[in-house]
Image 1: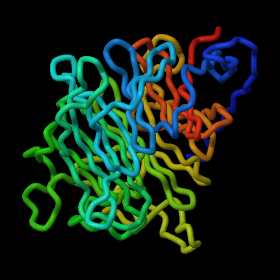
Image 2: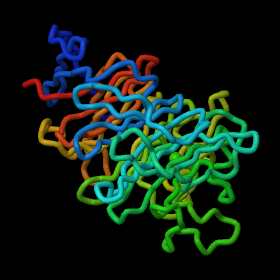
Image 3: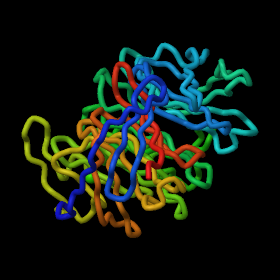
Length: 369
Ligand SMILES: [Ca+2]
C-alpha cells in the first residue's frame, strides 16, 4: 500500500477577496481549485450538515450549534441543545428532514463523575433558533473519567439506519470488550432502538447496539454512493491510521493487532497475524491523523468523481484517494496549511472544509480552471 506514488499540490495565494480573506488558487493533480473562506471565527468547528436551502448546520467543539449561510453569515448558538456538554461532535439531518425537521447530534456527556459519547435528536424550529424536544437516543456505556477518544461521527445508510462511531476512551482493551460501547461502531434505528438484524442482538452479555468492534477511535464515516456501503476511518496509535469497511460483527483488531505501535513505544503485532480479525483496506504509517471523510459525487470536479476525500489534522491536508471497488489505487495530498477537521459536499457540488482552529474557518473549493 505504501508503494503508491504520493502526489502533492502547490498552493498559490492570489488576491481575490472573499469574506474578507484572500482566495487561494490550488493546482492539484487533477483539478484547478479556488479556495474561498466562507466564514471565520468559529471555535474549533467539528461537524457540518447542509440544510435543504443550502445553509449549514455547524457544531463548535465547546458545545455550540450554529447556522451559517452560504454567504458566511453566522447565527447565534441554537438554543436548547444538550447542556452541559464539554464537547459537541457531529451533526446530521434525519433522512426525512423536510417532513420532520429532526437534527441529530453527537456530543460528550458528563455522567456519574465521568464522560461519555452520547447521541440525540431534536426538531429544528422554523425560525432555526431552537432545537425543540431534544431527546437522547444513545449513551455510550460505561462513562469513563478519561477525557479522550470520543469518536464520533453520524451516518445514515439508505435503509435509514443510524451509525454512531465511538472511541476506546484511551482504554485499549475496552475495544475488545463487547459489554461496553467503547471502541465500537454502533447501529441503531432513528429513535435509538436496536434493529432486529444487528449482529449481536441474541448474544448474552453483549451490547446489542454494536455493529463492529476492535476500533480505536473512529472520526470518519461515509456512505459510498451507489453501493450504500458504510466506510469508516480511525486514528491509529503511533502510525496505523486505518480505513475499514465494517461488516456486521467484524473485529477490526485494536489493540490485538495494529499497523502502528503504542504511543509509549510498546510494539503491537502486525496484521494478518490473527486470521480471525479483519484487516484495514488501507493504512498510513506515519499517521496522517484524519477526521471527517466523504465520497465526492459532484459535477464541479469531474476528475474526482467517486474519490474518497479525508480531512487531515496533523497532516494539514485534504487527502484524496482513488478507488477500484474496495481497493485504494492512488493517493494525493493537497496541502492546506491548517488542521482540517472535516470535509463535506454541498448540494451545489462544491466542497466545504472545516479548519480545526480557535478562529476556525469554513473553506469552499470551487473549480478554478
Ligand atoms: Ca485495525
